Image (cartoon, rainbow, N blue to C red; front, side, top):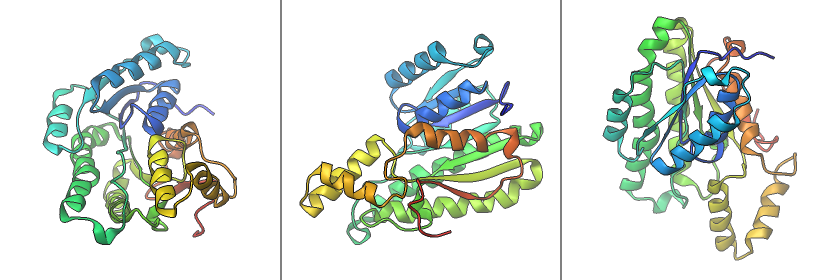
Length: 265
């Protein structure tokens, strides 16, 4: 299937590792010009070099990739960074590391405020920056990488459950407002995926349960009908499809990529 992403410009957040990095590579391999966004410039340079060296798109020399340095814990810094670029974006991938784990009752007001800024305020800043161009092009894709906690809260991730659900409702509202301009807004909900974030969750859960990390890993896999964790590339494939021309009539959805773990429909 030709996803028709040639000459499309994509802004991919959190793109130095995990699902964000895999998504940036997948979009580039489909012909998109990719701009990476993260806070670590050295890692951004490494991923950019990797994309340029290994891009599978047949006309990769015609592509223009770059990066922006921004810390999502500082929304004003992100706003300045996006305002410095002359590029106009057809595709926005909102993807930010999850809030720290723990029971909701133990979270401080600052924990909630910080998470809201990173996941709602920063999404809003980027969306306001890219939508005018999307409207003029009559093509736009805003895809938010969130969590299956949008459908089923995950024990021990109180702040994340709260904020991820807020992002889901933010996105659904935008999908209604922007649908008439040929702009879609969708959410991808990763399940257990082999990333640094999952390693952190396994460590926290194993300590709380007084068991080994290997035992906890096997327990979590037992919850998944597919009996394994996802590769970041598998989630990236779903994101890339939603960014394509072929997904033009898919709007306002929550798409679990979780091997069947989520029990709700």
